[in-house]
Image (cartoon, rainbow, N blue to C red; front, top):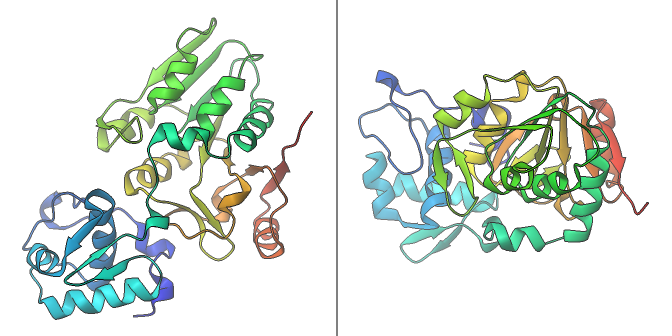
Length: 288
């Protein structure tokens, strides 16, 4: 298998094993037919939760030989997605996101500028959907002029910024709580959020690559965003320039699925070409 295809669009679908039971990172059901592509994806999802795992444990979870797991790990290592250690595998430090409060202060000036620019796209009476990202948090802080908004989010910090605003209605998509992301994920959160038809949807991206598109580090976060794109009339991605060319774990959108990119610096030439080819409007935010 070509390791360059590990995070292509076809790899990042929601898995549907037999008997209607959902496969996820914390519980791998033995007895299902899991091909190599699905197994690679599930190894990464598991590592997002556990950070590391032994070769033996992976072999038992997937009911395959340790040599099969070692071959899988070699492919993931060649693609830069995992690091091997004696008897096991872990996520590289570069692919592990820090806690929310730490991320909130990272690139804070850039996120503030991006948030202010994004707030200018919101008009009175809109239904607006936010993800749980720190970029969305900064944008929520900047959102003061438009009136009579309906705000939908799965993020506690975004909700906290909106909670006491006059003339705003707040809808929190509840579900399984992720303490690190300070947000709700899973089927319940997705099902609730899909009841809305946002005029505009604001999401962040953990990484942006000219060939792979928009990526994240959490399968839960990627799944939540991906499930809502078809509901929104306009999709806007908030992206600090330090994400350009960065390696992500989970693909969640192609360029063709995004209408606008708001960032703090001009994208490099290869990324600009990919954005232009998909007619993604790029707005570079700067000081007023």
